Amino acid sequence: MSDVFSARSWLFAPGDSEKKMQKATDGSADIAIFDLEDAVAPEAKATAREMVGAFLQAQPAEAKHRLWVRVNPLDGEHTLQDLAAIMPGHPGGIMLPKAFGRQDVELLNNYLSALEVANGIEQGSTKVIVLVTETAEGMYTTGDYKGAPRVVAMTWGAEDLADALGASENRNPDGSYGFTYELARSFCLMGASVAGVLPIETIQGDFRDLDGLRKRAQKVRQDGYRGMLAIHPAQVDVINEAFTPTEEELAAAQEIVDVFAANPGAGTIGHNGAMLDRPHLARAQALLALAGKTQAGR
Image (cartoon, rainbow, N blue to C red):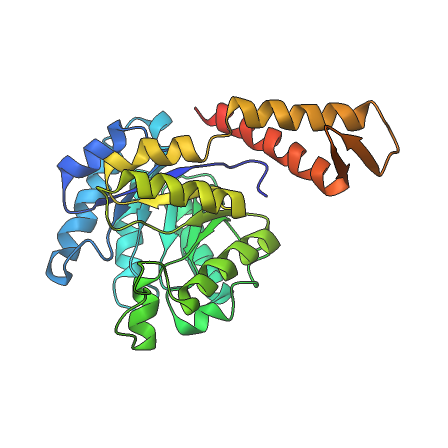
């Protein structure tokens, strides 16, 4: 897991709406993502990229680390124009959609390196989150991002994957994701673990169902996810809370760490009627480290 980057909530705002970009910027999301891809109609993309570029340039320098942009896919005609328009505004990071594999990140890195030099930005400082399951080919490459330049997080998507596969539906009758899409969620989680970056859960489309969002966010955090995408400001506080360890969790983790510290060299320890071993210690230490990064990011 990344030692230098942590973010729980990633809120999308359409890049052709200054009002919504401002609301996302002023809100409590750890990351605001100005969207030039799915939220913008083809005929509005040129206007939107100019709007995002101007908006970024108007923001104070100390705020820009949390202002990111989702550009258009590299296999289309818009990506370079997007980057040329927004990089003078020094965005904190780029979301790369519809990635086919590591080669897309390496190409993006080349583009960003040149644009950083051209705009007086520190080399390599623009971070990247990759959408790794929106193409069928991408599903096979989720484990290839270890050491990929700039990547600090990976996330997944179910809607574009369904389109890529020609599926008429990606959910079961009870509303849960079908097998292929649960597989995408698992591949993203495992790929992020291999790469040592943050795994970020995909959106919940029904932004009014905050109870369902809370349950889902808590479940995927238990599985290993460290944050979640949001499409509405109302989702942000729920996500932040779900991905912030509770006082009870922290106390229990600290107790495990203290028990092992009091018994150096022990492989297993009986504690409160249960047998603890080294994986329990590692999970407790990881939880405490996560809490420290969450606090530092506030």
